[in-house]
Length: 211
Ligand SMILES: N[C@@H](CCC(=O)N[C@@H](CS)C(=O)NCC(=O)O)C(=O)O
Image 1: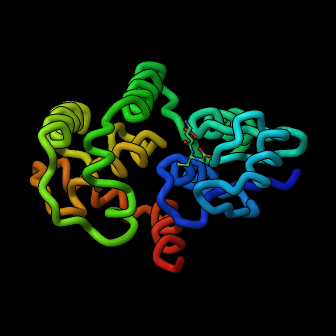
Image 2: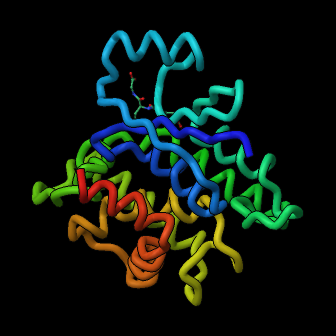
């Protein structure tokens, strides 16, 4: 098999690298990890831009392909290492569920800046913060919890009958609240905690703890 390389970042706080790494882990694919510091030093940035155009991490390297954008990476992995060849799925088989998963991942990639600022990923993968949410953060948290409550069935700890990569992204966003002791409905908190126990997620968490 052509070697897969994942460029990540050495601070272990990127939700986008998290997404790409969980995707590789869930597929059960061997890959080499290359870590760059954030902000990316100018010479490394120039090298990455020369190869991937967008010099940001995550970058997946597969043969001649240098691919950025977390969603493009998971879709590439899903379409290259297919379930029909025995690889676990990343996206739901059902078209409506797949559309819903993409809707959620897209929603999580736009906005939420107040919540991100108040509850950065360093407070999920590192030390929790104790400062109260700002007005903007609180309003975004309420909207996130409204959406999550509607999307997550009360009798399940995943979005659909089978796990999908949107579960990892949604759980990470929710952990910004759960891990910092902000109020979260029981069934939504149970969902986030259950997702957090997945071996693919724990692989990232363990690496973050070891940094
Ligand atoms: N939309 C991109 C976001 C990638 C991104 O912003 N990566 C950040 C780390 S979290 C980065 O590489 N920053 C370095 C820089 O901007 O120079 C994705 O989904 O992968």
